[in-house]
Length: 139
Image 1 (cartoon, rainbow, N blue to C red):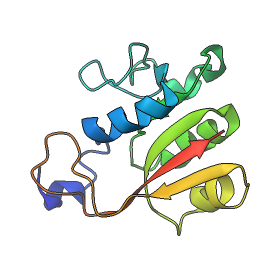
Image 2 (tube, helix red, strand yellow; image 1 turned 120 degrees about the vertical axis):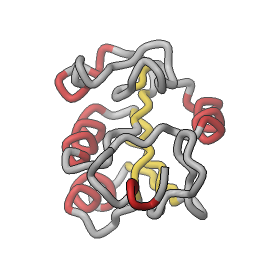
Image 3 (cartoon, rainbow, N blue to C red; image 1 turned 45 degrees about the horizontal axis):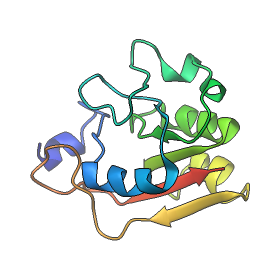
Image 4 (cartoon, rainbow, N blue to C red; image 1 turned 90 degrees about the horizontal axis):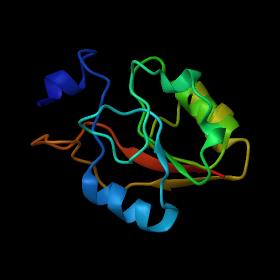
């Protein structure tokens, strides 16, 4: 994967780096991956694109949910759902200038933000992402 693809709208799916997930899972013990594919899911229980995690009830799962949503135009809907559902840990692009960041992460309080130093390498990419990332904990 190269930067031409990363800056295009050809894909909005970025597979979570396994080492990052493992470190977070040690703390949160995730019970559900709310937006995954069979090939990239990080949890035993998960919702696929076909199941549409935005339409599912996340509250039926006790414990923390993992969310690495599609980074396209719908990302605000995913962030809103995480905010409303609670007990969600999300890997998100650090887009502090967006409406969804200010509405559901920065302003409400009770939300933890951890900016990731450097740039992540998603999935099997050779190069790092051209954008910074953050971990957001909706509790």
